[in-house]
Every structure is written in C-alpha cells, then in structure tokens.
Amino acid sequence: DAKTTQPNSMESNEEEPVHLPCNHSTISGTDYIHWYRQLPSQGPEYVIHGLTSNVNNRMASLAIAEDRKSSTLILHRATLRDAAVYYCILRDDTDKLIFGTGTRLQVFP
Amino acid sequence: DGGITQSPKYLFRKEGQNVTLSCEQNLNHDAMYWYRQDPGQGLRLIYYSQIVNDFQKGDIAEGYSVSREKKESFPLTVTSAQKNPTAFYLCASSLVGSSYEQYFGPGTRLTVT
Image (cartoon, rainbow over all chains, first blue to last red; front, side):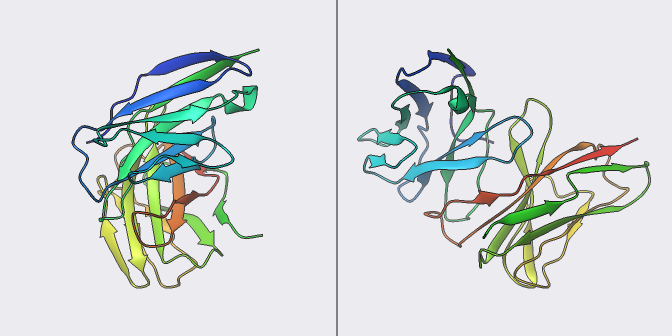
C-alpha cells in the first residue's frame, strides 16, 4: 500500500509558483522522501529527494515539515512542460519505491 | 550517453504466448527494477534485483519471470500464466540505497489479444 497521500489534481497558471503537498504520517526515521513526475506514455523522471532538511535543485525545491509527516514540492515558476503526474514516494531500506496515484498538475497559459 | 533502454516500444502478442521484454542500462547501477502501469494508475513493482544472479519478487510477481545474468541486463518474461498482461511496462535502475534516485527507461507498451 502507498504510504503517502496526495491530492488527485491541482491547477496552476503559467509562470506562477506551484506547491504540491504530500502527507506521510507513518514515515520512519530512515525513509527518504522522493518526488518523481511522469508525462503521458513516458517513464517517470526523478525530480528531487530529501531526508530531513529542505532541498533545492535546478528543477524544484522540497520543503519537509519538522516532524517529517508532510512535505511540499515547490515549482517556482510553472511552465507548460511541467504539466504531469507528480508522485511523492517514501523509499525505505528495502530499496523499493511504492507508487501511489499521484497528483495530476495542469498548467494553463 | 548513459541511460536505460527498453525495446521494443510497442509489442503485440496473441494470448497464450510468452513474451520477453528487454531492459539494458549502462549506468553501472547494481539495482534494477520492473514495474507495471495500468491506465490511470501508479506503478506497481513486479521484480527487482540488487546484484547479479539474485532477484526478489515485488508486489505482483505472479505470471512473470526475470533473470539477472549480467549487471547491465534485466529481461522480463511475461508468461501465459499472467491473466491480464496488457499494460505499460517500465524498467528502472539505481545505485543500492534509499538515498539514491531511480532512473527509468521509456517503457514498453504490451498488448495481448
């Protein structure tokens, strides 16, 4: 069973920031929080991951709550190419990724 | 260029036939994975391997088989025992450990009629 909860869909306008939430109340101390996104008929693409501290990379930022029971993926300026399904996943020491149904992000021009 | 290749992109088979999906990586990753995706759903893990000559069942291994004879290759066979084989199949690889990201191939869409 997926260990994360995400909204089914979200909308944004182009060039606006997008905050994609994820709840993971059963997270354990060694679970990493990973985010992937998937375009139609393509394989998922890695976005970002973190353990405790907030993380930034060229694609996005990841804000992790102090108790680690939730996190937020931040796209600073959405573009049409960011329209995809975003998956928030906990990766534990069994090394597996357990995918939920993700959040479908629509970006409007 | 480093990456993961899956072939073919589209595959059509008759019911009752076994079919093997190819997955190759040149990223020097020890771990490789096979997932299945049905329309509108997330990915589900079929099999994974963290080292050559060893592999473990995922959540939906029934009707599938794998081999890992080489580090670079992790072929998946969809057998006739798989009741609903039509799906999008994705292969991934990574370094071993939960702090590493997985890299996914472009997928193979299998249709069985």
